[in-house]
Length: 160
Length: 188
Image (cartoon, rainbow over the protein chains, first blue to last red):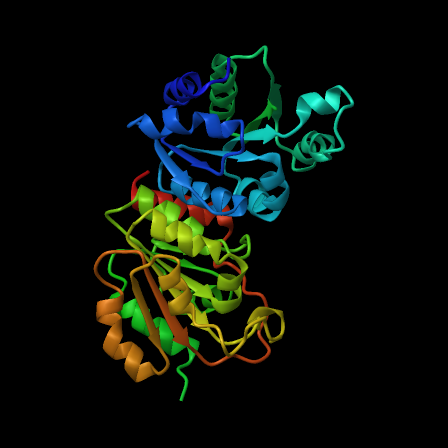
């Protein structure tokens, strides 16, 4: 189950120091747990491109940030993402909520977010895994730790 | 008479102390002529408009150093929301907006709002308590000590001369080398 307390614990286990985010309705349910955890600093930004640049600065300064955003923000933040992951080559990890993922699978939505989320990740050459209702925060921790061990960027897409 | 960008940066140089200096666009071409500190970081190639956000991350990670960001007016306009973010997460960050009234490195085209944008007022409206605006070199020289010290965030608006026939500046060394040098200087 991907709830706030288990996600927060997974981030601590993965040595994450800062969460840079703009929540969506799913990620937003983690706010209270993330805010309450003293070993993490939750940094709220105004636009997703900022999140990647802010996380890059934290990384340059020796911290281990993670970016949490919705896929709509991922689409908006393409240039910042490209710069941080490919120009600067920083091994940044991100959690991206995919709006309408389940409804799209059932053919019950006109929302185009799920159509483009995974192709965009592949276009930006970001290794990713999709976490759905059958996954737990342990799977998030595993993905983060795998990314850190390989010193490369990575992502999980949260099915919403 | 407007100050030149080089004159504006010379004042910054005299006051930077041990702070990290993040440069972008026009300032990234000029700053290496004045300083070769390992605490200099030319944000090139960049994501346009995001130098203050990068600087905020560095300032939060390295509070003992603090960060000066040398931004352009065109860059500032591309991500005004980051002023709100700066206000929300107080840190030792000093954002200097070098306002030449144009997109200089693309050939000098005007940007939206040229001539009537009050960056200090926008910053205050975003919640940044310490803002400054200087229109001449004499004013900047007189005010820099106060503006570039004390608690952050600080936003400083400088009116500067535009340089004709500029090209996109190149970083003084590859990004990987810049990162290695900066992190080595920071001990991380």
